[in-house]
Length: 452
Image (cartoon, rainbow, N blue to C red):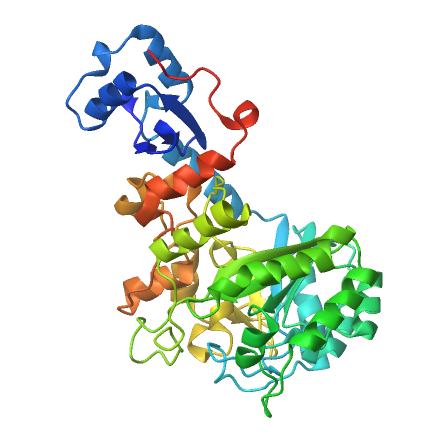
């Protein structure tokens, strides 16, 4: 038996001696002597054979002690491959336009030309789908730019999707700024339901209207977006509405206000609305050739500050938002064979971040030829967290997705220094103490506490 590399053993001033195991995503509460003995084992200063046999059985049943330390890696790799090479599903993130009606201060898409999809390209998308004759399920995400600027293309394509006999539309989502989500569109989507729609807000009206303004005249947008959401949730009660609140140091304290306001406005009335924090990322450390706005002016939160943010939400406001860890196999659409981002000219990319960059085109919907085989194989078969020794040895490996594949490749091939690690990594004791407090004893704690 060996000590699992996915154990985190620590002392909580409030709760005593705790052991979190990421493979089972659960805790054991320890007495002082057991904690000391396990600490010695963790540091290779004591043999497992010296432990009480009943305790060893408890530790083994909880995967705290394991026979094969590589077993979980093999399981995760297998599930990763199942997902990456699945041929029953075809995922398309379709950008009917690269145009956007906003002028956000942190946008990485600001230099993209405003191109709109033609009817010919729409027809080629349908042909592209039907060529995938092994596909049974079609998963569509509308993306941009601002996809609702290309609403006519969306309407025509959805009409054609219904005519496809070989593949059924089983997932239908959209990412939008919400400004154009008027009653006409809300009624349309009540007839062509979205499973999920994500709408971005940057905190309270005061903060939002400073940062997410209408182009080109910098008009405020908050009030209209909220009114549009009102209409949408009324007409689409079964659609999951995710309000993504973009945060940095300047507006993070506004989150609880917007959460309470929106929760009272929609969720308390029974609507399927989720308000969740998102953290503005720093792209400034990619390379000088990369003209992407970073966080020099926006003051991005570092990993420790993100944990502090969640701690305040929970301890001060008793709010558990997007914090509990979950098992993940890693990867994204970029690492899946049957997933593409479709640009308005019918060009194909593997990542949303690549739209508009001609050097990142891997193909076209009207052609069977691969435009850039090297780039395609890099996304599909290049390095992931499964190949990184640092990742495989990390205590958080089972509950980490490995970070953004696009960012990982920037670091490897373009000299970038983009952050890949979980925000939990630099404050594990605090992160897992919060998580421990949030768990119910009956459902989550290891029943047989590892006490001698």
